[in-house]
Image 1 (cartoon, rainbow over the protein chains, first blue to last red):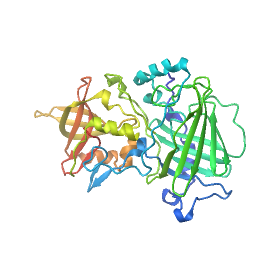
Image 2 (spheres, each protein chain N blue to C red; image 1 turned 135 degrees about the horizontal axis):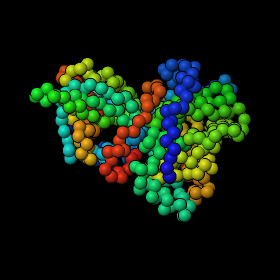
Image 3 (cartoon, rainbow over the protein chains, first blue to last red; image 1 turned 90 degrees about the vertical axis):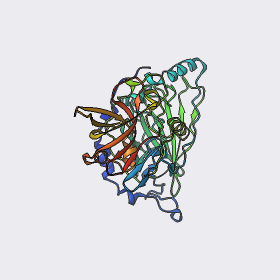
Amino acid sequence: MRNTPTRASNLPMVLVGLCLASVAPLSAQQPAGAAGGVPRSADGHPDLSGTWDNGAGIDFVRPTKEGESVCIFGCAAGAPPPAAGPAPRQSSPQYRPEFAARVADLDKRQVQEDPVLRCVAPGVPRIGPPDKIVQRAGEAVFLYEDVSGSFFRIVPTDGRPHPTNNEPSFLGDAVGHWEGDTLVVETKNFNDQTWLTDNGAFHTADLRVVERVSRTADTLEWTATVHDPAVLAAPWELAKRVARPAGVEIVESPPCIDRSLEHMVDDSHHTNPR
Amino acid sequence: MARRFLPLLSLLGALALSTGVGAHHSVAGQFDQAKRTTITGTVSKVDWINPHVYIYVDVADERGAVTTWRLESLPTAMLRKAGLTSEMIKGGGQKVTAAALMARNGTPNLAWLLNLKYEDGHEYTLAGE
């Protein structure tokens, strides 16, 4: 697969800025303590709003400091584990037999083919749990500070159907509804220019992803199920991810400009956790 | 600050298990763990970009000729979440000694940054060896 080099960083930042400006400071967003139970919005649904640290990718950092010195990796004492705990090992999507060779080939040539290595949006569910959620009656906005760029997803929860006039996109069209205390988000209308994993897991434009988002007093829980029956042998169920309130607010991602690939001397696999 | 560099392969292994380090990691295929170098100069520029920040260190030889090294490092958010800024990395123009791993393809003056130690004694350790 060769991907159109659409620059994810071109996505409008205005909406992101408005969303960030419309919510309380980070310290005021933190969930109530255990005694307070699950925070709820005025409509009675759990309030998923907050900035969330999922412990993987750029959230993996747990620096140690001594005076003005800082150690991120390679520290003598080792860094403490992420607040969210280690991310679970995920299974791999299972493909119909006729596509196994294609996946294996893409996996082997990941350095040449993986879209995110060229700063393309990672797609869903590869982008992982939201880094920030801004929820209000009738909609939730998922925000991401990603290595490939800053991304947002608007998730209507007022019962409207999927739009029918949007072009296929990297993050698709999301529509949500509440099942008890769980926000269920169905996303479709994707393009076919992202992968599901780091391992050559391509998909078609008929990809459909169902995410389930819920929370406890102090955690956000996220799961996803991937449906693409034209190429997958069965829906792919991701292991549950657990995020905790972040101590650092997200910001606009600086430009993503790859300068590494031209210096690669072999096909060493890149890991791109998120 | 007491420290030691953890082996690069151990780091990568740990990261693989924990879905850790760089949201975009290219160290193994680009830099040589067996070719460690140390340079001393001043940080002249920081490119605060993803997927990797680039730090430029100007190194003068005994005759005053300056060579600029490009040191590749972590994604911006990792440095930011550790409390580091581009200005902090520049160190106010003071002399800095950088430990780094050389590029495998022989590109001159390109390396993967392990550690920056400034003249006043403070240091930033960004990656294991």
